[in-house]
Amino acid sequence: MVEELVAAGIGAAVGIAVYAGVAARVVRQYERGLVFRFGRLREGIRGPGFTMILPFVDRLHKVNMQIVTLPVPAQEGITRDNVTVRVDAVVYFKVVDPANAIIEVEDYRFAVSQMAQTSLRSIIGKSDLDDLLSNREQLNQGLELMIDSPAVGWGVQIDRVEIKDVSLPETMKRSMARQAEADRERRARVINADAELQASKKLAEAAAVMSEQPAALQLRLLQTVVAVAAEKNSTLVLPFPVELLRFLERAAPAPGGPEAAPQPQPPPPPGVTAPPAPPELTGDPPRALDEPGTDPQDGPEADRPTA
Image 1 (cartoon, rainbow, N blue to C red):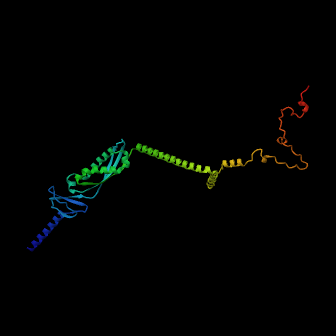
Image 2: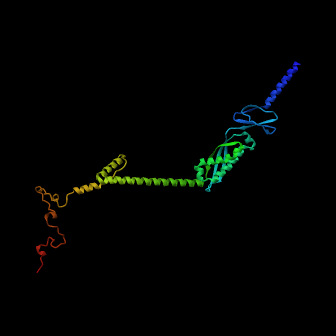
Image 3: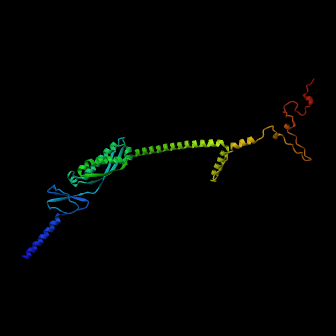
């Protein structure tokens, strides 16, 4: 009798162990469990930890509650300004209602992916190329709203949508490069013209100041010479200042004045014949050779008329 009781106890323990092994389930921290009994969803969501279900009657379905990173394949479209582009994006979403995520949609991941692709094509058609390149924050918000509207009924919350890359044709890239180069050259010319205008105003003011003191121009010239000569690798040609010419002109004596009188010549040494005086010093003007009476053979009678 005792042996039968022991055998029955052992059999019951083995049966309980087998039942527990079949009915026991473990739900991880980032998951939630849904129990379907004969295909019908039971109320209540199983939280993380150890849980039990009825074997061969209940079926436990686990739903991941983590944020899912879903890359959106590159979509090719034509922008509002008729430019062909390829745009790819990434969607961050998570499940907030496990029951709706399993019951309302067959595969919520695939549904979110398709919705993201169609919304991305729609955004491309409604936007200009400049918006896709420089105004991505606003496009990301619009894309997030377009995906989040139907996803709310699926128990899915769109956390963030980001446009990753915008691919342009090679011809468009070259055109944009030429446009950017022309714009930079235009700004450089405007800056140079502005600098020349400001420099001309300052030079005009400096010239007005130097005109009051002509010596200031000479001092500025000497400063420039010092600055150039510091390198010692070039030949310096100094211009003759006009002010110095004017100074010499004012310092020169007037013609016919007392300072212009001829200075007395010292007597020649003994034995040396004194050179003849210049014509302008003898008082007689010089006579041309072709004038009459200039031939040395002709005497005073040559000038007289014959009877």
